[in-house]
Image 1 (cartoon, chains in turn purple, red):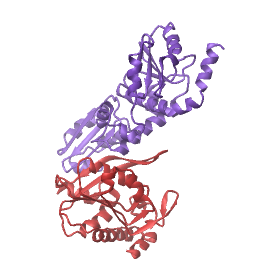
Image 2 (cartoon, chains in turn cyan, purple):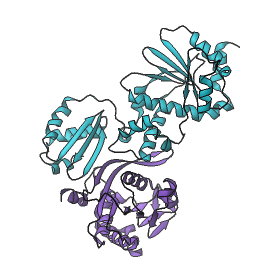
Image 3 (tube, one colour):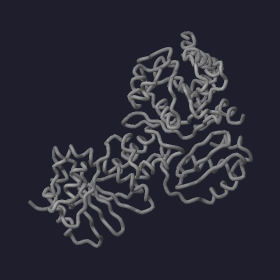
Image 4 (tube, chains in turn brown, yellow):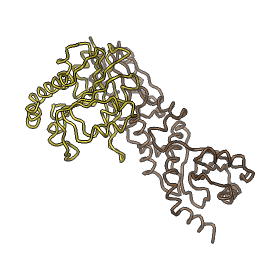
Length: 269
Length: 203
């Protein structure tokens, strides 16, 4: 059987592949979420890359291509992936390539990391987070990042929304076998549901509006990572993404009818 | 109560608002608040009618008001609401004994869930009352499921009617359709400021 045919069969998968789909999808969304933290770096993301034996997840950066193979079962052995890993590592490329085996159990990760059969140059990554989005945000790294995305601690509902919008965006945007940019995933996210903070370049209109807003007594605001967060002296506070049409409308309204006091601002949101 | 609920089905804007106020007052009598350290969590559309009626009927005028503006999304997993703006009464004590989540109708419970989650991030009340003139059958069970057992065990549901039918995502007979529309708030901005909140924010 030719390599191409073998890879095609591998992509088609069997029953075990279906069982692993949830794990793979969860990992994909997780990586998309992580890539959003460095959204200014263009990153290509792909699954089932053509003629690629380590195809579960591939990340393409300007200088490096990272391949991930996912194995959730406890009994995973190096012998199951050794051929594919060696093939992938031996391919000549302009870019540096790395191959990572992603496992779902701590004991498996430990066993595989110290194994003598480990494919030289490969890595082992433990991915044992809960498959329930509302639970797994206790993860220190992403949990902290998600807290930063909102006007306060994020609720389980908000976290589920972020998770679900990214998952839907990824599922809609991806095409097996092709790289898509992280920006395409971001673009697919609905604006009005975005509590996410993403890079935003201040416009001249915003700079003009900013001066007017600074002059309003009792109104304070910050603009950080593309999120406009405001607080009124009376206890009202809120936030919205600078990428939304709501923010553009807000700037238009401020410039059209410059607010002089707090009460004027209330009609602008 | 039954007459007020029946009035909601056909009333024009002004009588509808009045009926909501009265229902708010009736809920206040049913809830029987004992603690002075009470917070009422409301939505902008309910603030000036249901919540205002509720607050007027309370003997203690010091009840704190919290208002959350939410945006709702329908996802394959169910409806989810996110808080986009909030008003927290500056007079709210650090320790709140009782929190009352007020809503004109509880259907999927996503707004109640989000509002309560937001509130509980900063408070540990001993009593959690979820009050609405009308609820959809099973909404209470659904809400309990979405919170840890410790929190869900504190829930008390207060309602006057339980409906079990939904048409086009609207509970029937419910409160006579979409509350914002019936209250005459349909064309208002997403972050409109209820008079109750504006008054509390400036006083």
